[in-house]
Image (cartoon, rainbow, N blue to C red):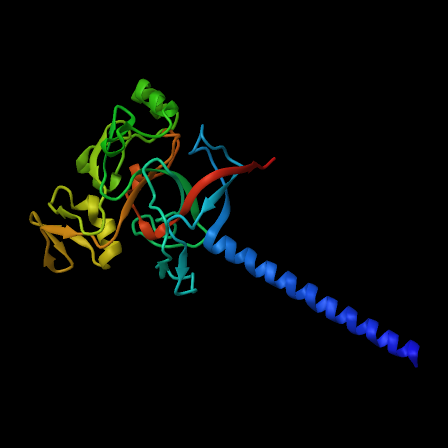
Length: 282
């Protein structure tokens, strides 16, 4: 009888211990995902667009806490719209920061739309309220004191002829949504980067520059008829932005698909700020 009682006690201890271990593992798993969702996560660099600063295969830490983690309010990620709010952060993105963001044209080449796993890493060259230029291939942001970003490829762009660049596959035309501007990756801007509440004049010459951001914010298309610009059916002479916008670009200015070509990125699409390199995958 004593031996049987001892066996029963041992079984109970094993069950209790197993339950404790299982509960601990579950708690750790939950904490792990909370940490990744709200505080910090890793991102693997792909492609050459951030060379020479970062190379394909390198893994970096992405701080979500700094500007506030995104909390989704709709988990149907088949939709092209992002439904979320951002937790309070302790610091804003600064010009010069490396950020991970959702690519804004993952579903459509002409409309800003959300795709959860389609993310990329770029440098923030201009934040809301800045005005950005590219002069002879070099980024210039007066709000940061002048040139910005790694200068290696900017100098190569500055010193290489258009004919050689074209032969190597470099696309020179920039902001192709508005070819009236005549901008290139060598000479670009000035482009004001809107912050919430900023108002821009809308004309028949510049409306294409703002068509995508305004469509994103209002759901209505800008169109021009007889020299007059319309938002839907309403004549439009100026527009006040409802959100913050960013100019994101790769440090390898010879091989990066970025805001020079497709335009600005809404703040909601920024996942977080890169804080350090973790490792290089072999």
